[in-house]
Amino acid sequence: MNKNTFTKISLKKGEISIYDFGAVRLHAYKTNDFIDDEVFIVEKNGSAVVIESPCFFDNNNEFEEYINSLNVKTMGMLVSYHGAGANCLKNVPKYSTENAKVYSEKGGGKALIDNFASVFGDSFDNEIHAITNIISAGKNTIGDIDFVITPTQEAFDIEFPEINAVYTHMLGHDCHSIVAGENHADAIIAQLKEYISKGYDLILTSHYTPEDLKDANIKIEYIENLKAIAEQCGNADEFKRKVKECYSHYSGENYLDMTAGFFFK
Image (tube, rainbow, N blue to C red; front, side, top):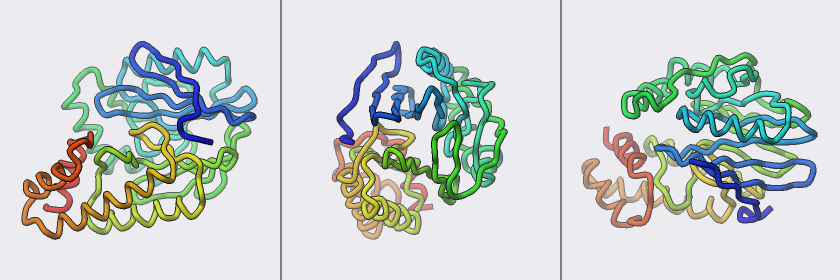
């Protein structure tokens, strides 16, 4: 599946890209919110499973209207890196791993939610999803759709065997990402190299439209360069300045600020 082979639907705020795999359809919802969230629907045999949720109230409403228009039964929502937005699909079962649940309720995810709530105010749905079903690593099936769960340090990634795709938190071949220091940088590079070796058609992330293995190679080069620049710099401001000189066209400067904070605590 080519990442550019989709049908586009424009909504009032966001937009939907539909990838048709035959028995399975993937709906990628680009929220166009302040933090560029991306939410996914995997549809098969009249059932649907949602991957993450929007976290701004206007997106919640728009997303629910769209999924209701599909005339499918929503079997569940997988809540991984984005625990906020609990007013979206309130009555749908919520699936998560134990570590991701802790991340959203007490850990780094909760800290991010609190920060976003203070920045964006009443437009941000800071209520945390109440997890109804704890899932484990390996194969899980929800609504006739198979998922392979791989726990990560914060939450979990998801493989979709039927469509040869994988979901992780961040990629973005032309935007900055949160890189929490050199060890985290090396872990991301190893993960992306694994994706390349497995030959996935699509890489889905929380903050970007679906990407491919060419984009993974671009990101590896970017992260290697981040490490090299960090070694040359003595403080966060110098680091940010040099990175922006190299990647002047990149979006996500707030993520670069966070990365600088990790490399230069």
